[in-house]
Length: 168
Image (cartoon, rainbow, N blue to C red; front, top):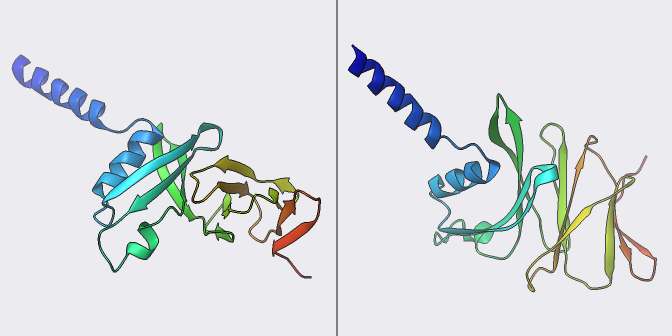
């Protein structure tokens, strides 16, 4: 009986040690088990927002438009019962905006390839801007409680370019 109890406790300990307990481990486990992804790279981890910015690559021609470029993607994580969960993904198109509007917080993101772009404003808030590789330059994102935000770029000369305008 003691041997069976020891084996059960040892097995539970091993299972508990193998379960991912950081958002990076959850990210790596998901990416390694994704049959559509042949290679991926973490570009930046933004711990205060539970965001991992990454790129991915696939040899499969049917899906390589999404995976085979330097186009960044954002993985957003939440914690539930002391476990990290990959809650949503945002794809950040080049010099455009994108949004994942399935449940709060809403994830707005995009890229800036022009040096004249100084900052991005989503609603009334400055988006976070992360420096990237030479090909993309900068990725921006914002977590919002609103699912219909105006998005604009402020240029170095102070002028504005609307990426998304909300009309009443």
